[in-house]
Length: 275
Image 1 (cartoon, helix red, strand yellow):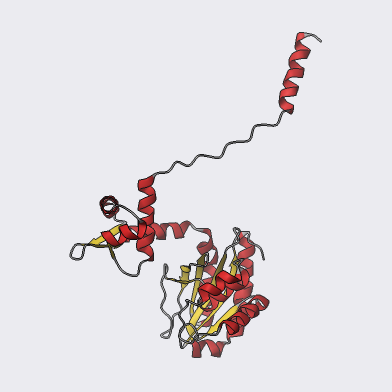
Image 2: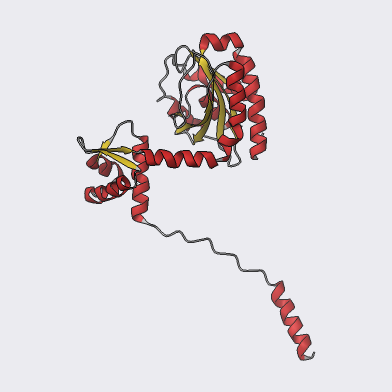
């Protein structure tokens, strides 16, 4: 074998060797950033402003470290401080960031045309909610009807993931263990609380129908109809119509549910979720 043939054979042998697996990118810990994010999440979950020591205790931080991070967040307009009480809460800068994220997010953009049509068709408020496991649902898009009788809700409104018609959808179409669902169900607050057995039967009915109805149980006098949107990552979001019960019943809760089911299935398919 001459020199040229040896070079060709050597190159062929190298090409036949499997390429080494690429190493996953190493994520270096940045403690200050992690603590800042933890503080923002805590303040976002809290129903009222919190003082430095309350925040530090909740997150197991040194109070002086917590104070320094809070001052940076205040300077960046992500956190606001009440100078009289020295308590902290989320600020408008964080809201602006959230709105920017929502404008670029696929799910709200995909469902907005349907929400506009639903609100006009049924004279009610149509919303899209995004799940965060079994913790809570967040309103990420909405459309309001031009009606004097309507339920007020805002983008960013948050409520327990298993409550109302949306909760029945999460329980029916999600992959969460029933034991965990049952534990969280016991902590829910309703105006007209269903028994666990009745609620479980309604979850089963939602699975069969493809939509769920809450007729005044979560909020007395308010009817809520929801259908699940299956996301590519396996999570369950929902399209929802909310309105005054008397008005919603005249239209027909089942009719609204079937309409939502069809729209939610199309959105699921468009976004790449399972249908």
